[in-house]
Length: 124
Image (cartoon, rainbow, N blue to C red):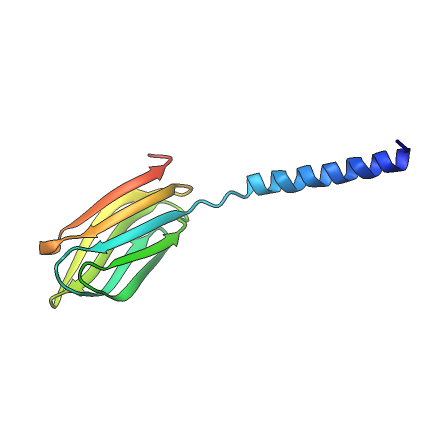
């Protein structure tokens, strides 16, 4: 193999290793959230707050399901608020930490109760 071909092959191999290493270093941590309305009634103005941001929906029908994917920036408490039958419900959830990933299931229950089920890594 000529010296030029060898240098060319080494340059391509180095470039590919650099690209592969960059992909590994830029891991994106996501949490997939599922909110289920089990209150027995339609809800409105649902908002979920998490470290550094929030998401929500204007309305969620009885037995409706809402999905959202997010990333945490920093550490902080998860909370949810919504209106059902003219009453505002607010519930505090668990603490979330930066670089966690996995799933969160939030069940909105009758009587203003909220159940948080976390399947996150790493656990703190």
